[in-house]
Amino acid sequence: MKCEDCLRCLCDYIDEQLDALTESCFLQHLEECPTCTALLHTVQKTIILSRSIWCRETPLPRKVIRKAYYQLRIHYRRR
Ligand SMILES: [Zn+2]
Image (cartoon, rainbow, N blue to C red):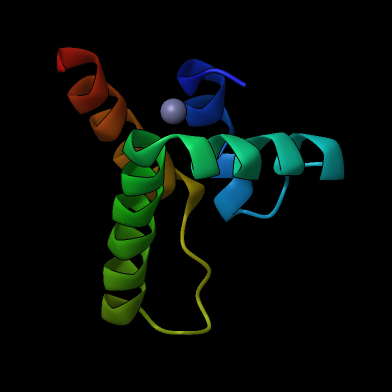
């Protein structure tokens, strides 16, 4: 899996939507790539922060995850 593919899987991974094969490729890539690992942690942190603001019963809108993802992607491309 390349970084680009990894980024594409990020949202689905957080949403637990990846199939087993894709997830294992994704996790394998994370082990080899500190950049993507850092990105995942940043996204997760953003989500945790967002969730603490909202009611716990309310699921985090996918829109918010997408937004965080695109911001990271822009950041990532600048490097
Ligand atoms: Zn990567």
